[in-house]
Image 1: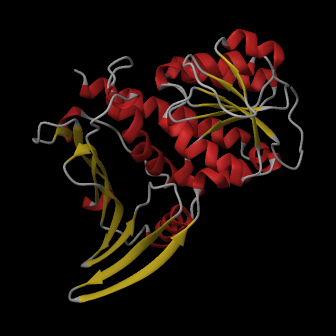
Image 2: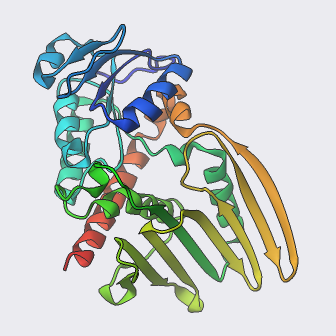
Image 3: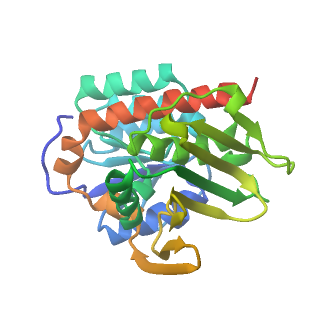
Length: 315
């Protein structure tokens, strides 16, 4: 299906029905005034006014090509399902990560360009006010910044989820780690990953501590994975001043803080942030068309780095 500059997406089909689709995607689609017309799931479910398919191939023959496909299945299925819909002429939004290795992402991008459709990674945090604040601040102060701390720790899950599944390698790296790799890419930070700079935190949970040296003795310190306490921020240090952007990777509507701390002085800016999921679905098609090539480049870089990090972790 040729990409057009239509005002916005009108109808959608969700592929994969779990907690994320039910609690995040469906409410965001409603707020964005997109009609959820179809759903594809192996589960036996019934939802009002929605046509449900248990067989993805049967759905392909019935769903209108103008329908936006939203893939919410486990990550090891993302690339395969994306390619299937792309080859049938659909625009596709995929939960992160789109692919688990370089071969997969190159194939997805190639088919996207061959069939002239849209491929969008559903990275909700990139469509929030806090994300824009972080990128703007970094661009303005990057030559002055001595140290960057990135923290994304979530409590270990007590229920069954793809996040604690072993089907596709090391799940927390491809899930939680994808945020960290993504923000480094958006800040245009050049770095290499070495096993000597990566260690596992000693708390019995799956998480990583990364130290990434930069020029002029500057460094980036990253902690991500599962932990006892929730942590979600990015901290820039300039001499003895620390600027903390709280909940940077949180994509739902929420109050967030930006704090400026220097010696004994603390100043806090409170920000009411938007729903990143709703923002993604509300974007006009022309917005995504303009970012076509840039997005594909970012998807490739992110996937290669995630694969590299996962390989080091599993050695």
